[in-house]
Amino acid sequence: MSKLEGKVAVISGAARGQGRAHAVAMAREGATVVAFDICEPLKTPLHPGATIEQLDETVELVRKEGQECLSAKVDARDLTELEALAKRVMSTYGRIDILVINHGIWTIGESTWALDEASWQESIDVNLTGAWKVAKAFVPRIIDGQQGGSVILTASVNGLKAQPCAPAYTATKHGVIGLMKTLAWELGEHSIRVNAICPGAIATDMTQKGGTVEKSLEYTPRFFSTDRSLLPAGWVPPETVAKTAVFLASDDSEHITGVALPVDAGWTNY
Ligand SMILES: NC(=O)c1ccc[n+]([C@@H]2O[C@H](COP(=O)([O-])OP(=O)(O)OC[C@H]3O[C@@H](n4cnc5c(N)ncnc54)[C@H](O)[C@@H]3O)[C@@H](O)[C@H]2O)c1
Image (cartoon, rainbow, N blue to C red; front, side, top):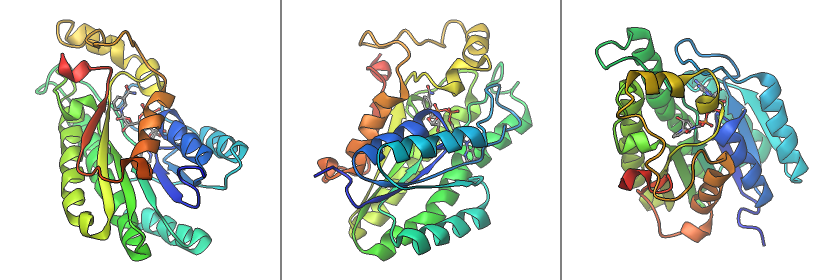
């Protein structure tokens, strides 16, 4: 039997990158997928926004795995839209077992004090408040199902270690780990496990398009580094992270909760 047979997985930021990889990998293991994304550019990051066409492509890829996929253009900052989607998922599939809070943006500035206010605020709103709102809308549905479940939050290695020139990103990703730990406490009695993935250098549009990496190297050549990996890894494909997401979603990790797990080729150990 596949690892996620009969489960329904809701994934934020699923139009491309890691969210898409999680959707496809979970479908391959038998899960029905609900993929949502803002599908619009955000105001402050250098990297480009996702598109509705990219979200449609995620749907196609999930269907190629033989699974159903419900998709929606929803902004993680909009609680009303999130609650409407949660209602739609319940009326369509009747259950939610897995929640992957994966959406995010990466903003930078020359220093913490040079970062503009809009970048700070948008990062807090999307990465941290947005993560809380997604949890607020969907977690009660997992509890109501009384079947247990798995919540996975995508933090970052910057949830564990600072990145100079990315103060808002670092602060929000540390915050995401705090949110994960609180949820893990609260949801344990419902047999719902809550963990965070802390990806290292992943080859997605966030890092490969728009020049955030290049600008970071310009701002802080001493500190911004992708060459601290202990393994000879470099930029890894999002499918590498998806294997960990499937592990955390499945019974293979049945005794694991409250953990912030780096998928970083040892970067945080440097
Ligand atoms: N790429 C990396 O090296 C790396 C490293 C560590 C952590 N992360 C984190 O991994 C997660 C996935 O990023 P990725 O690498 O796949 O990049 P990505 O930019 O390809 O994907 C992020 C997705 O989130 C969506 N999104 C952004 N704001 C949203 C909102 N308000 N509502 C709904 N969707 C929204 C985007 O449209 C996009 O599709 C993010 O949380 C990111 O911070 C990435």
